[in-house]
Length: 264
Image (tube, rainbow, N blue to C red):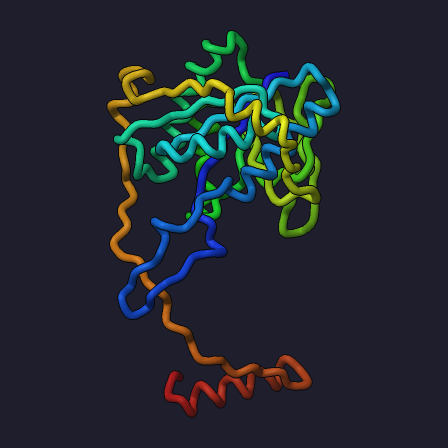
């Protein structure tokens, strides 16, 4: 079983400070960490490896030089290999651009590893954008099944079985392999590395892919999303709660309030 975990380095939002008057933040200077849900995806893969020694885990990230830190940290807790996609032209990619770049690099990694990936895991969304789009987009590019909001994974009769979190509870769904899975918050956190494993991870060789290594397709990476401005939303004043003895009385009171306010 070959598992690829796509991870992202994000700002530690717990240390984020915003100057409302100036409209600025310390986003560029605060420490960067492994995105929370990606950590859940990584721990899920490692637990599969704990249960089956034949499972091999590879991690990949698209990011600048500092993103190598989360790759070394991933190896320290149990990943077998890591790959880094690092190119100046990829620095400000949005979700669509990142998913497209991943779709280009995955076949390159498979060729280097001489094995196809059975599972591709990602966090359900990143801490910084909360978009939750890379997983579904990647599945579309790779033309394979995608299961979102998975809390538990297992392999049953040659298929992946996921316990998915929904608004109404949990559902169990099977999908054919290979499959893309986005992992939500699990009951367990990412394990801590040992001193020995951290030292070994620091010595690990991490191959780097630049845009030129990804073929002609890399020239067509585009950025359809543009950030116009960043600001703090104005706080809205509290509303009025209408809670009469019956629904009819509540409707009558609401109608009267709206009428007095000149809304109706």
